[in-house]
Image 1 (cartoon, rainbow, N blue to C red):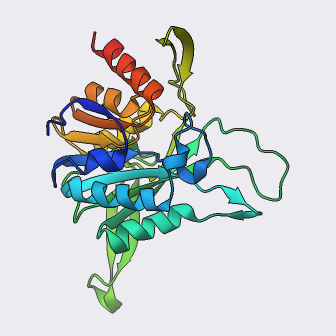
Image 2: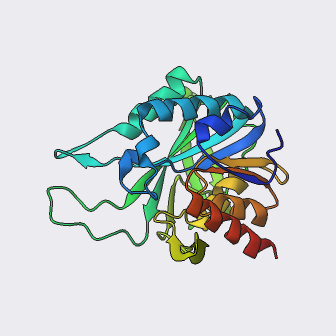
Length: 272
């Protein structure tokens, strides 16, 4: 089955079952977590059984050393967080055999205002980073050190010297690895497209678009040029577009016909 630079329309469980084992380098996606959005009336097919099917297939098609970035959050029901995301993490680790390489946070620069309730305003989502064994690629994003060039004198524990300590003298580097809280605005790349179906013109707009800058940063971090990136909930095509812009190959799956058309239009516009 040729998957390179393809966006399939259909159910992710069905299509993933046709993809070979160990065939993609990275998966980055945001599933319809806790049914917080409608997604074009496709949610009737999303449940715990569907999640487990998809998670099992994703773990299977991922190459050894590959990465899954799973962007989710939890709804509030009856005054309590559902903890769905944590149960999904445990399934990936305990049932699929993946490692939880990192728990990252997407901090939203422009979160939705929160109605009055007895909790602080919700301004982040989880980005769980799973690995199949030890990650084979890590190209860390570097940021400037505020104390670059500063000379420090200190002592270090358990490294020899008198009483297990010794004098340390070092100069702060000009750069350091970025922390695991990443800041991006919400849906800065939403697009509306007019399509015609059975003679009727309708406007299509995906309700939950990935910030493309976030996807690009993850793709650059966990893959190299020429690698294959999969999104089983492709939506409007952000992961495909980010893959093209970073010289990676993509494969996507989208259940909703309208979103699939929007995705293909976005890819076409980018590659003209």
